[in-house]
Image (cartoon, rainbow, N blue to C red; front, side, top):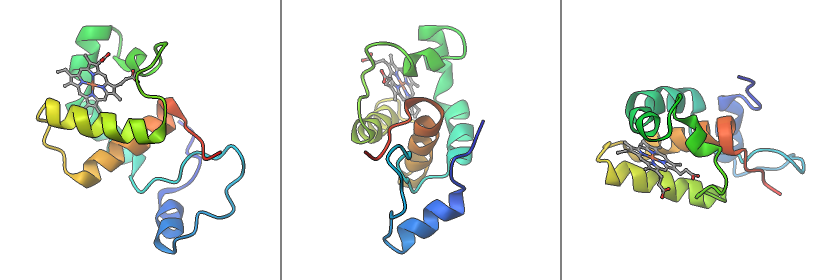
Length: 111
Ligand code: HEC
């Protein structure tokens, strides 16, 4: 999977409060670590999506219409699923999963 921006650049850009230099179709700069998010998602989230939607479960993120329509919606949905399913992820882990899902599936951009 192609990484658009390495994690430390994202962290740095946020640390100095600067999202500048972002072009029209850049993905959101998110604080989470998508690689960690992918592992967490695999371990904690996919089984149920697989059972309900078949395959590797990712079709839930590519269906039409999708429930999630914005980056804010994605953050809320992941936090909601975390609570509902008692996955017991902390805020950082939720951020990591949001970063992973946006990079791999939703691809919301900043414009
Ligand atoms: C107990 C089963 C179950 C587990 C565990 C689960 N989900 Fe879900 N998830 C669902 C179902 C069912 C839906 C569809 C809800 C709907 O259509 O209203 C869904 C929908 C979603 C969506 C919205 C998809 C869209 O349409 O855009 C996201 C994002 C999501 N889940 C993320 C997660 C994450 C992250 C985790 C792990 C923390 C997780 N889910 C764990 C059952 C589950």
